[in-house]
Image (tube, rainbow, N blue to C red; front, side, top):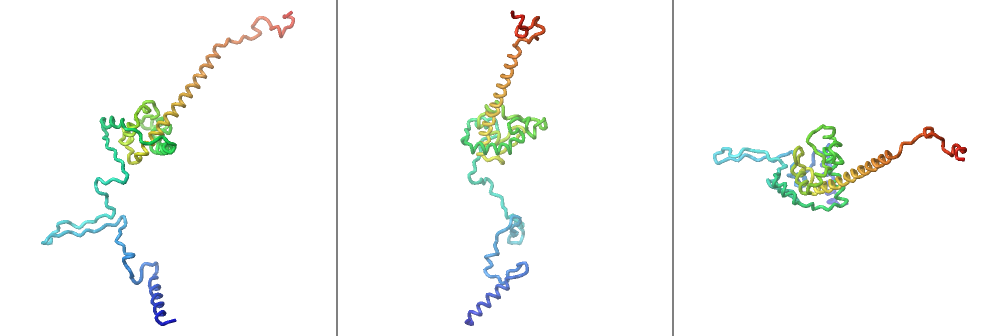
Length: 244
């Protein structure tokens, strides 16, 4: 082996050994420090800003710590953000009634609306929209919560329900932080389907009750049966001699 090659091999071996320490707390020889000495900060660390002094040495601005997780600039919005500009006023509610649901009531939309409804709405209003079946308001635990499977809610325009979900109403807080705009429209579609199902169930029960009432009425119209021993004579089929 040439002498130069041997010297290079020994040098690299020494570098490899020098880089191995207990717990690897030291890197040995610092080659290319910019590769591992990153200026990035962890979330709980802070940048230290030195104090600003004037010409006489007086402190103009004291030293401060700037957190690494700097909050966004005022007015910053996330990408694809869809602002809702209608105020929570009677005038804003009237304008909201003119809004139309941009989502189509597809199977995916209804399933998404059902999922969001069961998470955020059913706890107070019940899975079927009946407040009596809810965990929070059932059995009168909390007052002031209404059922939402009623005809009055079904008569509300989609924009009005969207406005209520966005801004809240009465004891109901707003859900604009929990539900994205598209999820609110999906919940409204599911609420429509829920009302239709509940109404159909009510119609079926009403029809069944009507059938039962009619059957009972027909039964009541039948003559009271009279026992044979009270008819005065035995039927001919029982007394053949009576038929001669």
